[in-house]
Image 1: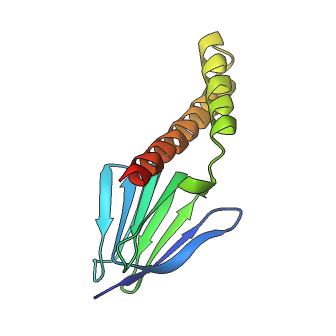
Image 2: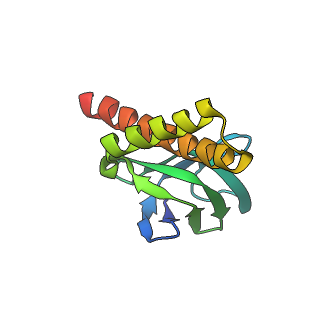
Image 3: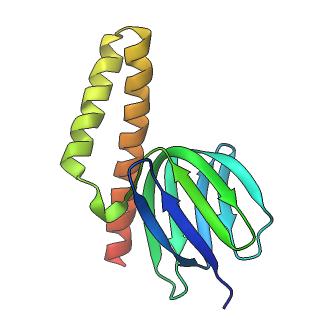
Length: 140
């Protein structure tokens, strides 16, 4: 079975490094599926999910806060602003951050606060979606 190396790195740490048969990420214009022998490319990523399918068929779910995806002949690199494995997400903390961002947006603070709140809200929603996908996969 053909594989491609996948590295997911955030500003803080290396989140994942291993072989994959498929990497799916949320690009600026939609989802991208990267399989072995994919053509080289570089694109920006929106806050969203990255799903890595390992050679044994396991799907690893990550939530990222945007970044860059680079595809080379033998490696896919996700350089994420923030990244976390779905199973490592603290749901209570994420819900609190979501509520705080929504409060700032509802009160219409200054433009800088609103932009920051929108960013935090997007990241919180992505992480909550990752938790839901993880729960759904555990039920099957």
